[in-house]
Length: 199
Image (cartoon, rainbow, N blue to C red):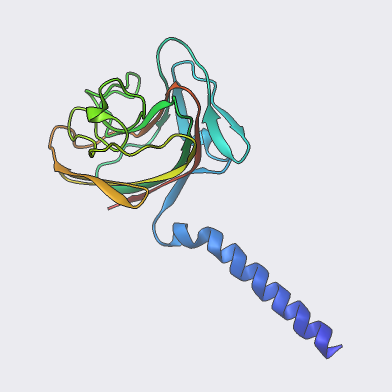
């Protein structure tokens, strides 16, 4: 009887510990925007991309002639953002930051952390902030695997870390605050985890 009670208590402790792991990010100030197949309700759709929750992620693989976006309802000024994503080799995607018009998303009125291995001009391809900070040479590749972006925006200081390697560390004061948008432009993009922490 005592062994069974000890085993039951150990099992209960393990369950509680594992449950605690899921809320650890929240306790540390992180808010999940995407968590596996959960999170579409945190965004407004702009454009015609076929966003679905499937296979452990939120993903899109087709759309109209223009890119489609998932745009947060909240606006953010200073923050850290962590994203886990899978991109096909031909994907054109990105994370758009501090967007000025949530109904019209562009690389002019947002900062775009690009995901675009096959960009005709690789200057602002994967690992770059389009029209603000160039990609490293050689440009890192995202296609065909799971990747991470860690993005910090504090005042005019913008930092991108792609798969553990810093690709951008720049100052630009053009945009101070706005929603965040996840893009589908071409190919297949899957978002497995996206979380944000205001600074």
